Image (tube, rainbow, N blue to C red):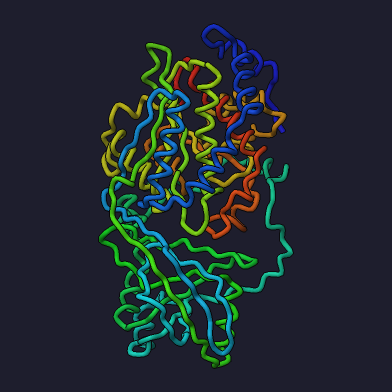
Length: 517
């Protein structure tokens, strides 16, 4: 698929990237041996998912996992490993036990999982079911339902359409799809942090952007509580039988906590809705016991560094990162245990290979990404300057690049260039030794809604890896099936090894990566 000159690339590799005491092919050989023949990446993701998952923001489980990651990298001999706090009022929330079932007109076990940061039920509760299609017009909902919700369970939302499962649940990018992306000439979609992409009268900064989205349910929750409703049942159309309990963002101490709120399978939702349409009133029995607490010490980013060897360049940094937090209904294996494990393995490979990169290589495992980049934004504001201000700290100029992984467990297929034309020939040359693995596809396109957006906003070259989707958006993303069974070992080994080689080469450059105009 590539149309650049192999002669020029070979010259670039052998002349432009001669490393201290050895040439690049020898360095890549060490990386390949460590990454492919001595891989530990599956052990890492297994620990993260089976032992230390889930890792919901604010929880004791998250902090225990963070301590494990810190100790693991210290045991590898990584030069510096430390925590940085990112939130003082993000609350932990855990499920103790729950159940949901229909008892009339016949028994049915409701396939359910509670949404995060919802209140307990105060024991077993029973109530009739009513359906509210939408609360977008809340005043109309109040007019229709005021005085009628006491002791009721609310079936909330639109009924899912039938799905005969004709489409494959898992896929890799086809050659045509990759070629189409490579032909792109306009970097879309836009960065959600970019003020030019927003209505500035409505959105002044990131916090307002996310808060306006996350708080849109609060008035409805308040109305239901005031009316004495018992609980809410909602769904997302993930077939077959998949439960998708992400979407509540009441994690701060000051936020309103909703009444018990369950995500249920589309099949359970569909049957309940059809019974209501037949004027048969289902009776719902449920309980939910949760634990809500505030421990600011749990809210940490995990930072680690391999210190650069060049006296003049060691203050410059090549950063890699992945968000460490997950949602709560499963073990967080693909979102984002796989990305975190890959980036940890990158650090291990470089350290174990005995290579001495000129620049410092820094990993950041972010907390609070699922709640709106909380960890990476706090880090950026602390190190680079406030998002609403134009003044930037000098540390911004010390970052050569930030490379992020957060699109599931699929194989790397290339890099989203985020509109940075100048890095394309550089990345082409760096990835050329791995062309046989089909990881060197580059597109000027952006991708968004993960932590590299923050670095891109600060005009730091920030990139997200193109990955095969597999079943990320059909089965595992934020669902009760985000488990190790959907993590392919070969894909992760390739990802870690190729990113280690890429990061090492960036660290060895005579100059930092070019920035966008």
